[in-house]
Amino acid sequence: MALVTFSNPEYKDKTVYAVAGSHTQSLLKLARENKIPIEFECEDGDCGTCLVKVTSVDKKPGRMGGPLTEKEKSILRQHGKITKEELEQMIVDDLPSPWRLACQMIVRDEDILVEY
Image (tube, rainbow, N blue to C red; front, side, top):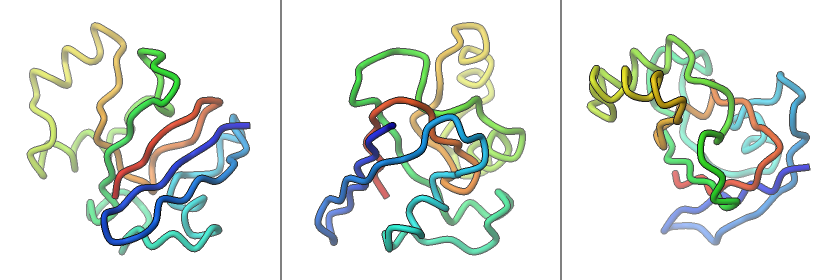
């Protein structure tokens, strides 16, 4: 089980349990099931509306969900959240980006903070 804390200045922080490793439960799906108001439109990684910042509470480097999807890479670059050079360095260092799309990120067995 993973603990996911959703944080937003306009709402009280909320921590929920996530079934880790299901490979089907996205961060957005988890938020919707727990009535956390993360904005979204397409739910398919094409629009970037569900952009969130994710940090590890465990302080374990190289985790924070599965690897970036190709859609995430493209949208994050379009929104100026990541450069081509940073993306290439992430691949070399096997380190994740703190910026993710909630509809694309699959929760792993780790405690995370999601700022939306």
